Structure formats: structure tokens, C-alpha cells
Image 1 (tube, rainbow, N blue to C red):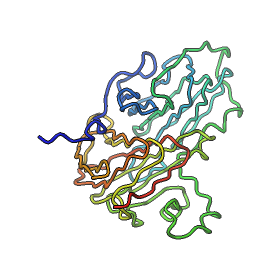
Image 2: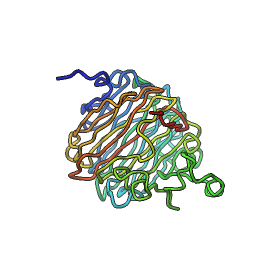
Image 3: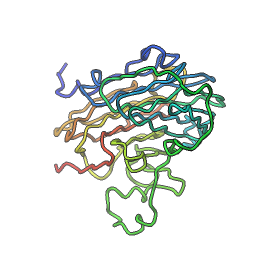
Image 4: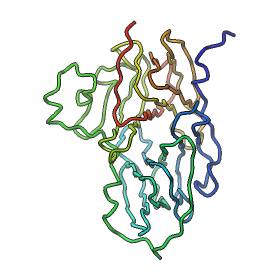
Length: 320
């Protein structure tokens, strides 16, 4: 077997128990040491029944910024959550409740938790992005006796949609590579496969950037994919000034090790090909050329997440 130069950048996900007291069940859990030093920690799991998590009791605080994402898995409607979620924020235990796909933004040093999944009509997916290579948390005593309503931290709860400034979008050039309005609908959902980006690209995607995330230095996605073919017609490979990970996951809430598709990803300036058909994380260091990305077959729709360590997402093509 020929040894590939970039095989170390393609990792099967690790399904394991997270830190004690954080989540009630095993989930995909990976830190920087598992992702070639990528400066973030990441986890993902499905929630099928009402439960309490992050943490299972009390509250925690981190020395870094964190995003807690709650999404539905109905690939026909990315704007459907199918659950009711509450989260407590701050020493005040200010409680916020939502029933739409949302991200909870946790500034460093802010006590938060627990998260209560009050109702589950259909299984949901929850992933977290911590903006440091190592997961660190300190349990904090709850000063308030009971959770209470308030609006001090309401700005930290954001709907999971792509935020388009339609007035600015109308003034952009049609060939502007960052003009996501060309593939977006007015509800904030991107449709890249349907609108010509590439046949294997997403059916429905939402993408949030630093400006949407209270200035957090990250941008990330959630999307549903079900079609075969090349993801990008525009070129062979691109790169980003900052590091990113590409996370491929299945949508079977009973099996975190099932992807339901096979993909082929080019890595490096010579497009070294890597093929995988199980949940996988691809690590792309800053300035590292990657793509083309081709979906070879699909048995069931699957999910895909980009996590890029910048508030913006510059993606210049690499000239052949």
C-alpha cells in the first residue's frame, strides 16, 4: 500500500464519553490533540429524549469562547428543530427557551448551564465548538436559588440561519465568490447544489460568521447533503488563511459511527486523494490546499460541518 503524505489529516471520529458530568451519553468528542493541534475542541451527539446536559447538574465556566449548537435532523427542512430547549446563563441563572435551531454563544468566563431538553418531538443533533485546543471547565456554585427570566443575555441566543444583508447583496458583482446571496433564499438557507455551485454540494446549509456571532473569531455551518458529484464547479482546490476542520457525520441518531455515503477528498497541492465512508474529520491547516471534494455514493442523507478559526471565510482558489 502506498503511504500517503496527508493521511494524518484525515481522522475517523472518536466516539467516547466526554468529561465527567458534562453529557449523559457517549458522543463524538475530539480535542486539539486528536486533530493535529487544531485550536478548538469539538463534540457532537444526538438527543432522543428529554434530558439535562452541559453540565448534567449545576453550571460551568470556560477560559475561552464556546458555541453550543442545536439543530434538527429533518433533511427536508433545516429550519425545523423538533424540540424545546432551555439554557441558564450567568450567575443570575437567566433562563432562555427556544424551539428553533439555535446557537448559544458563551463568552469566556460566563457561567452557563445546565441545558435542559424539555421536549423532543424528533431526535435532534447538538454539537459544541470550544475555541481552545484543550477542553477546560470549572464548576461554579449557583448563587441564585432558581432560574429566572430576563433579557441581559438574550443577545447570546442566535437562530441558525445565514444572515444576508440583502441591500448590500444587491450591489455586489455577480461573480463575487463571497456573495452567498446568490445561493440563499429569503429565509436564510443556502441551496448550493440546486443553484449551480456543484451537484454534490449541500441541499440545505446555514452558515454563520463572526459578525453574526457577537464577534467570536469563528465561522461554522450545518448542512444536509444527499447527492452525488463534485462539490465545486469553480476550481480544483482552494485554501483559507486560517485553519479549519471539515466534519462529515451521519444522521442516524442510533449510530454515531454510520455515515451513509462515500466521499473522495483531495489534499495538498497535488490533490492527493483520500476516500472514506464513515464519519470523518479532515483537518486543513492555515494556507493548506484542499479539494476537489466528490461524493461517490449516497445511501442516506448525511450532515456536514465546517469549523473555520476566523470570523470570515476567505477561500481563494489555487491556480493549477
